[in-house]
Image (cartoon, rainbow, N blue to C red; front, side, top):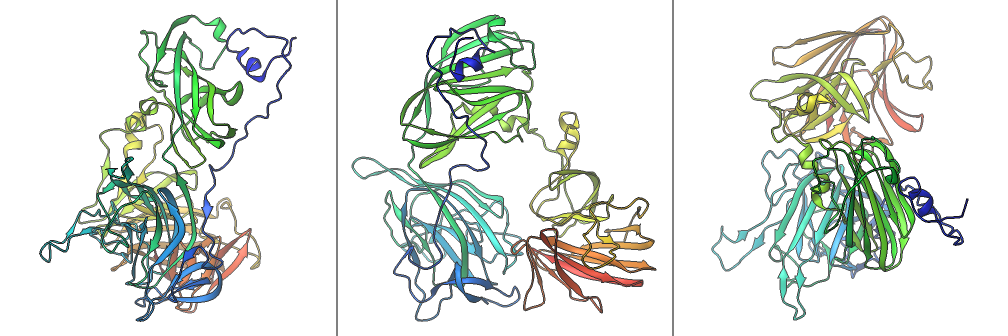
Length: 629
C-alpha cells in the first residue's frame, strides 16, 4: 500500500482520494484536555501586582468573618488572600498594575455582615460587592448588581440612573467565600479617539448563577476613578466602604479578534446510515458555495444526509487554540491542514466533552468539517474556538445548534403559594439519577429535595420552586425535575450507619434489609415528616425553613436499641469556627447546632475527605441543626 498522509488515511474511509508517493508526514494527534486556554493569576504572595497600596490593604493566609457580627473580619498573616480593612486614615481604593480592555475575570470574595465594596473594570464600571444575604428584593446596589451612574446636576433623589439589578439574589451568607465569573467587553473607539460603542457586561455569574447578561453601560458608574472612557484601564477595588477579602484572582485578556472561515463549499450526500461511511459510496446530491457552516442548510427533501464543508480557516495570531465540538446525536469529523482534530463517529450527546488543543500559525489553513445529518428532527452541531487573547466564540453559524430550540417554549413550572408543595420526581445529584425523590417547596422560598431510597437530603435552594418540563415534554426522555434558583448540594449518602470503630469507612450502600422507607405524613404546617427504619431504629425527619435569612432547620428523632452514627456533612474541608459554626467545604455553607444537647459532633478525615459525624446512643435521641448558605 502506498504511503499517504494522516488526512488521506482518514478520508479513505469517506471519499476516494489519490495517494501519491509523497513521504508520510509525521503528525501528533491532538489530545483531549480538561480546560481551555489557561488564565493568568494575580499573585497574592505580596502587593506587588498593585499600584501604591495604602495601609488598609494587606496580604493574609486566611480570614474569618463571624456571620453574626457587623463588619467583622479577622485575618492570619501569610500569603494567598488579599484583605481590605479600612479606617479613618487609610481607606483608599486599590488599582492593578495590569491594564485591560476586554476581560474575563474570576475571583473569590468574602463579605462580612453589612459590608460593602465594588470591583471596577477599567477603574470605571462597577460590579457591586455587598452583603445581600436574605434580601427578597434586590437592586443595582446589591451583590451581583451593575451599579448605577450618577448625575450631580439633577435634583436629589433623581441623580442615580441606569444600573442593573441581579436577575436573582445568589448572595451567600456573610462569612462564606463567594465566586464571581465576569466577562467584560470594553468600549470601542475610532481612529480619532471617538467612542463608537459602549462598554457592556456580557455575563456576570455569582456562585454559578447567571445574574447579569448583556448589560450595556453608557459611561462610568458612580464613584468611578475617572469620568472619561479609554480603551484600556486598571482594575480597581473599592477600599472605603467596609472590610472585604479576595483570593484566587485570575483573568484572560482579549483583543477583540476572532477566528473566521471563508471560501466555503458545501457538498451534500444522501445517506441512510447512523454512522459515517465512505462518501464515495454515497450519491452526491449537490455542491455549492455557502457563506456559513450550519446543520440547518436548505437542501432537497431527502431527510437523511451527510454534509461536507470545505474552505479556509483564518487564524488571526500564532499560538495555542482550543477547539470545542458539540454534537447533537450524530457524528462529525474536523480536519485542519490535513491533520485530524476530531473523528467522532456514531451518536453523541451534548454532555460529551469534545475539546482539542492545537498550536497554529497566523494565516489561512485548509479546513474540512463533515457531519452526519441523519436525524433531521433532532440534529445540529457547533464548533467553538478560543486562542491567544481570543475569547471563545462560534465558528459555525448560531442556528447550526440552537439550544433554545431544544427548550420547550412553554415550561411546566410548579409554583408555591401560601402552603408548602410536595412534588415526586427523578433528581440528578452529583451526576447520578436518583429515582425515589421528593422535592418540597415552601412559601418562604426555601426548598429542598429528599432521597426516599436512602433517607438522605440531596440539595437545597432558594428562589422559585420547581421545573417539571423534562418530566412531560418531549416524551419525558430525561424524566427529571429541576430546581429553579440558587442551589447547594448535600452529601446524599445514607445518613445513618453502624460503625465497628471510629476509623471504619462510611458505607457507600445500605446493607440489605437494614433500611426501609415507611413514608411521610404532613404536619400541621404543611411540611412532610419522613419516617424510615434503619438498623432497627425508627427515624423521623422534618425540614423547615428558617424564619430569617437563607437556611433550613433539620429536626431528627432517632429511636433505637443500639449505637449508631449520623453523618451530617462531608467535603474537602470541614472546619469548626470560633463562633461554634461548622464551615463545610471552606466556602459552601454553614452548619450550626443551636440545640445539640449531649451529642457532640466530630470531624474526621476519611477516604480523602472530611466528614462531620455524631455518635447516637441507644434510646430516643434528637438531632437539631441548621444549614445556612
